[in-house]
Image (tube, rainbow, N blue to C red; front, side):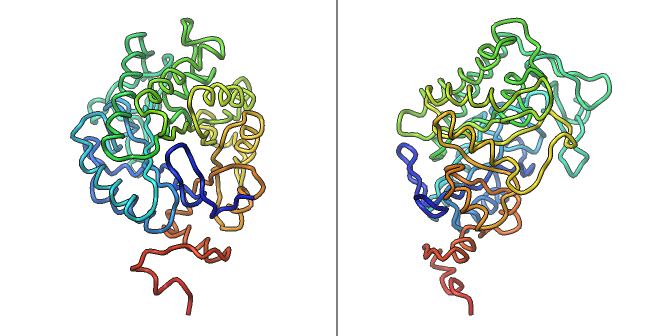
Length: 356
């Protein structure tokens, strides 16, 4: 029976354990470029023993950024520093993954420590786009609805970013279709009010994500792992549901997706979501059981025994650690020690492997 420190084979990549570092926005780029902050932030998680290290949401276009500080992969100039990061991650025994994203109506925001509100063009922002016209935080401001040409441009931008990700040395791509961002906005009836072939029915609302998945799979080939992060529930009446997620996961699995990263929310007010340890794990468990696809569990997973139980109980195939990794970059090494697994440490850290 698998446990937290059993390997996981995903097509041509084998993760040394079931711990992944979840994408976490750092808002520390200029013009989309990675820098020393990203090298140290991501590299330290590889040194800390994670099986997979995923970048933050990486914008496929300038207008797809959440904020002007977002990481990007919309031009070839972004590749060299990202290659430096992936080289370091792989040299330290982890797989390097990237989350490709478009922020949709949540684009053009100030960084969280500057209030997070909509940034106007006068403040260095830009006009956001979405599935449908959608109100923004600023009074009387709206995202504009993507035209059919605009939708095709989004697909093309995902394809181009996937190709650059290969050139930058990434071994896993995750498509971000969660948290109210563009692809999630197309899926959710709360945002998608279109009347064309991209709106209305479940099939139509899923069309853009499915196109992105198919085109990405064509770019990366058959040996390359492909994930999709979804919001498994909108947590509100008349929104996206877990049943929708199961149906979507089946379709994605049939079209070359290897793992569903099961988050939730992003369109509902925080007060609508009842949080607590493991609060999102049932989404991963349900999708895994009913859709027959591997899943990743997220959400207030903070201890070794908690993470291990998720894998041992077959609730998910991968555990994605976020804030606990910010508190403890060597969480996987600490978890191995606590659970009694003798894992390889960086040779520079060997003298600390045993306490005392």
